[in-house]
Length: 174
Picture 1: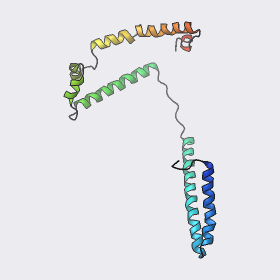
Picture 2 (picture 1 turned 135 degrees about the vertical axis):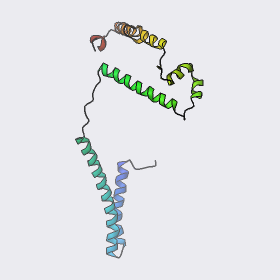
Picture 3 (picture 1 turned 90 degrees about the horizontal axis):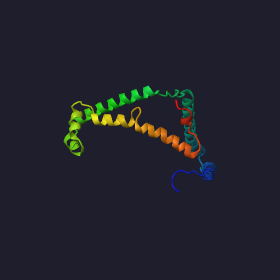
Picture 4 (picture 1 turned 180 degrees about the horizontal axis):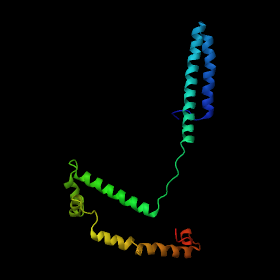
């Protein structure tokens, strides 16, 4: 109801009323140079606005034509794992620096943690994972883990029940 007009019919009606009003403004004024100025100034402002709009649209179109995006580089599994390790290490170092800054209330953070001793060790430079967490993760998600076996066997069982073979089953090397 409020805001700029979106209906084409209403927009055309407004343009028509403006075009009808310009000759009426000219005819209503007895001093012809002033009447001409009163008519030409709104027309110039409208046309400058229209020209600027079209020029910016052409510039955007031209920029998108000339600046074609570079093709996306897909990561290999090794690059993905390496990037994950690097980014994790960088984020952990950033977290250590942040927690060691004077603005952070470390005591309040330690009170909310389940194991404040491992947090204190982390701030001193120790690993953010305990030995138990590493072993448990390897058992669950490492090579030959129960998680991967369930994923693989679960997919085969589901395929047999539904009567179709998923693409990953057809191409096991992918």
